[in-house]
Image (cartoon, rainbow, N blue to C red; front, top):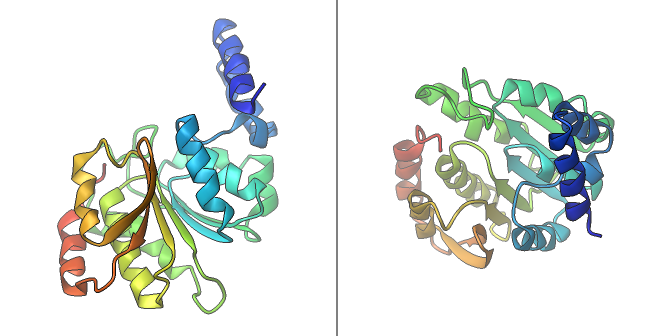
Length: 230
């Protein structure tokens, strides 16, 4: 029996017993077993394959992906916009063991958000930049190289475009950019002007930066899309 099937069976039992709180307690105490990335199995296979070659990962949006990467010994920089979930993540055993060692966790205050960290009202420019840009200020390029970026949170277009900007600046052009829910959301496809597809599985897509990117246009597009929270 795979961990995914086992987890589904246990969580189904929790639902039948009307004890949804047990799910969170199981994730908290046994994160590697019960806190899997929220994606299809085929997407998860590609995610694992891509992350296997990475040592340092920046992720927008925390959760099962965070737990998986920490369990594999990756250094992870992570941004979260749901304050309640951010606080919960900090109670997880593996997270507490890894904080400020292998795991650097940042809360981006976007005001009131839904359970997925999306602002309930249109965010201001300052708060959106706090999400997609500020984490890069915490990364010292002389000490570590980010070799994969996983985008699965808020402001995904702005996160992607700003990531391209920073990777070009640091000359990390071989870094993989991984975006979840990509192909089914047409408004994400504007980033294809700057990225080449490396691999895809359903709606998980892996990219690498194109050659000869027009940086002036890139900057303009960041400003154009920085308020799009979805």
